[in-house]
Image 1 (cartoon, rainbow, N blue to C red):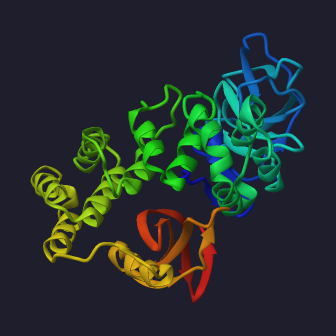
Image 2 (image 1 turned 180 degrees about the vertical axis):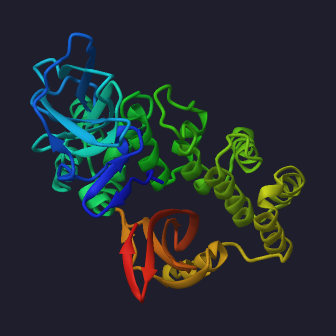
Length: 384
């Protein structure tokens, strides 16, 4: 799943993740007080770089640096990035030290973040661009799709996911190539996992964690683990086992793998779950429920009626109390479908997006992962 930004009103805080996480636009916080900047003789120089989603210098970005004093008074200094995407400034450490930065440029994502050397702004996109790119071919399509995946899709992330899924047959070859591109690899992997073609999953399993990954470098494995409901070779079983044992120190990742081992419900998945129960004690309750399901001899998650199968699959995922399933969204050929499951878990209202494939007249469940979260307060749902 895509990583969350923490939000307070219209202020979106970037936790330092890659541009593909698609943070939404914001307005510069009014609480930051502008003062004219004059470098003291003992000032410390600094450089900031603003780049687009493909690492290219981005000129004309409004950059506001928040400088905090020991008394917690916050001053702000305003700059505009030059043609090389660089902002050059200085500060007097005896007066204050840089703590935060907001970046804004028309047509690009804007956000508020900590003070660091580089800021990535994705271009704001229209979902209609997906159709245009899908009609292209070869290198031209791959280049335009690369631009698309490097942009900010957050304004309509569900619509973009649906559109890319709809044109999956036209786009898969380019997506496979872009899965090795350092700038858009995570976005390409996520779409391939959503499509859940067996050959594409084997490719993604073979890839390493990107060198420039975020503060949660292995979180990408969560979506992959949830899609491996029909492992075909030893590498895929090994991937699931390592994830379930929490070798990557990420509780989303091991939870996703345990969920899939439950869904598989085979002798091999049971043996791995037993090992996980002994070694990953933090997930003991989750593993116990998975083993109970596997040992019950459940029917295969397949059938001719997609709506009925969707309800059965949601019951197996069972994150809290099932609320309902949304209407399915199909690919252009009509042999793949996305279906959203909705659950209530305490104060959380969760959306899980499931993938289904049709072979002949039979639909087959190909995994589900969390794609949305909200909280309920006094009977009203609020996006998190």
